[in-house]
Length: 334
Image 1 (cartoon, rainbow, N blue to C red):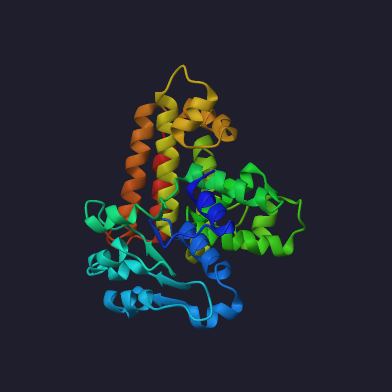
Image 2 (cartoon, rainbow, N blue to C red):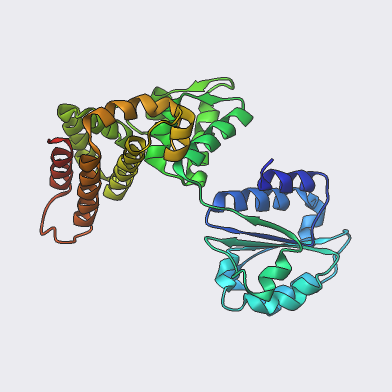
């Protein structure tokens, strides 16, 4: 059971903490916990007088403490949720007196996204006495596991190619992924296995012309297919931004470098070191036979240069398509 599940389990038992400090780079899990608290801690009648949702940019720490010290009206407790609490970062140290002695009739939820309070401060140390969550950004391999778990909990499944396609296109933004999966849940019957066709028809990601298929084409040194894909990208630039392409391709060749560098490892060990699903190791084996380590290093440098050119660094007036074309030819050529 992970930290989010533990917190939710205690909330469902109505074992409440006076303070919830939810922080970290991944906002999705912060929202999961804070949304549950918002929806379930107070009844609808109690919410009218006892629930306050405030934003860090709109409130001072003094006002927050004042609200937290107020007594509940016709209820056992008050609930105060501070969204975007990171906006209080300059003055949040002033919350220390309250954290040292919180109101027994108030639940205070601090949603501190995209970072955390300096762990060396007394405030951070005091907050550890209560319920805390550090929501760390997930790696791609973790995100793929999360997608499978999320769908399983909702009585759906997804094949590995479709899952990789989804994550390659949307990245590790769990809120965005969850939003797209929820759309599929509305359209598809429970028990359905989600396929690349479902992704293409309902999310708008081409199952044939996407960055996942581009990396596969490069791995096979299939120049005609790679050129087809980048031509499609050029015609659909808004849906295929250069940073998304270069980030995914760089990650692919980095994983290929790790694969080629490790010897005498089991598939499970290789997949863990590379941060990929074991299902795709066969593709890496094929690519490793075509790309020596020195060439892989060269490809990674080519991709970095393409990324820089797309940002205007020593690129002159080179076009989106020409950057991709130059990169693909440099990667595939011997």
